[in-house]
Image 1: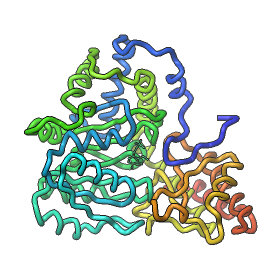
Image 2 (image 1 turned 90 degrees about the horizontal axis):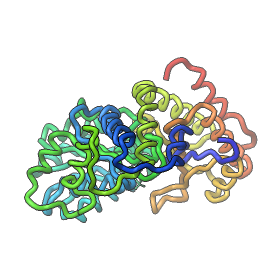
Image 3 (image 1 turned 180 degrees about the horizontal axis):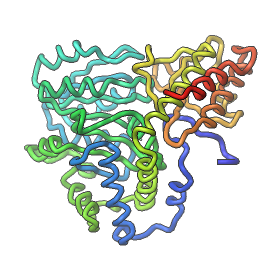
Image 4 (image 1 turned 90 degrees about the vertical axis):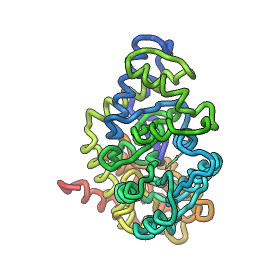
Length: 391
Ligand code: PMP
């Protein structure tokens, strides 16, 4: 949008104008027939987005952390064994949430920039009976893309339910709930789903809903309790109104528009676009001599990049210099390594132009910081990727 800076952080992202338009429209009643229809369609389309035909979607006002809370509080009871795979800050948070609900959590933390070893996880799964395993698809603090498909297959072998934090992956990375056997996946509106912050989106498989039905104690969180929301989601999907908590009317309308656009683009096409942009961006960083946190390209997210600052670059001055070029980036998020790296989001409606603008802004900032002598190498590397016909 002209007259504003380009927001290239890993959420919130740049939003489509048709989506934003919904935010400024007069708010209707939550029982208005048009809203009922929009909400019902959004619920149906969330199932398509998560590739979970028979799943139960929950679209609830709140951020991604609420989605984490919903998954944890509905499926854990005190004393349940949970296995948490950690690849960064958000895996740690998920573990804290499980513990808040009394779960007995075993964690396997991968070294920064890496993912867990399949054999190591299998050994842990053999040691005792776990009810749940949770995995962060893309940990936004590191840009590491975990091997959800492989780990889900492994957990299924041991009869363990799988929860996937897809906040930085859904609608941009490959994630097939039904086919891979995932029981709960969730995201938040402000990421690749392309809607301003404020909605938690979660889909639960039949097995997850059955596990919920078998609980012996009530859910410890009132707002997030599926027992409160299930009748609401079912009613709106059947084009009827129902009330538990007032839905975020404008956000739901915006979600309805965004989901229609995402599905119109096609999930496969969308994945390819994200892969291409990510590859172009990452090769620009490499051409400038910037290493990235993920130790190899197979486990690097397509939604974001986490490059290390080169030697001699001051983090604050660098981010300000990039901002002066009209682009907003994010700093590091791992508490003990904050000043070693920065983060760039490239998801949603991001295009070649946004990517090139961001690369140029980084080049200029690196020249100003005395690291590069001239601009161009990064942009040239990215253009070579964009010129290729395949990903
Ligand atoms: N999980 C991941 C992977 C995230 O990236 C985020 C947000 N950056 C969250 C959970 C929490 O989402 P929110 O900030 O919307 O509460």
